[in-house]
Length: 154
Image 1 (cartoon, rainbow, N blue to C red):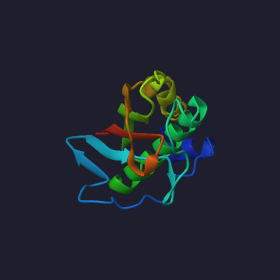
Image 2 (cartoon, helix red, strand yellow):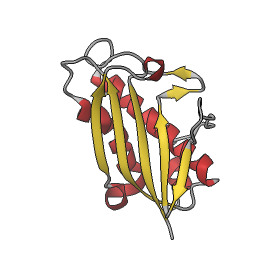
Image 3 (tube, helix red, strand yellow):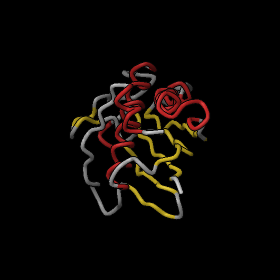
Image 4 (tube, rainbow, N blue to C red):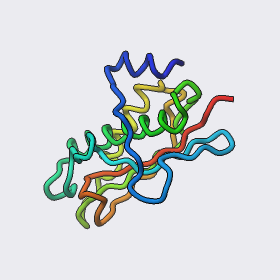
């Protein structure tokens, strides 16, 4: 699978990734795995979907936020590896949902990223482990933050 071609087929343009805001790496490669740090649904420095699910953010907007955050994670992966040629599949997706105490649709929000993973990688390589949890707050009041673990070819 050529990931670059697949992204073009889906009309997905990866943004320029930004440097981390503190003393950590955007991504780390170790023993055939790439671990990508948490990504927000940002365009440049602007958070595209902010606020709490269950209050001012709908599930659909949260799903879009998860989708944008995953696209940013792919950009961070590209920057970590130099390109996307060595990517085999997404192994794990962790999704943190900024939500009210009574919100219970974390999994539905995470589906925004999971569905995109299946679109990009297909049913076989798109299957991934996932955790979605609610949190009291996220950086920049983002509605969602996610991180990924990726298997590399070879």
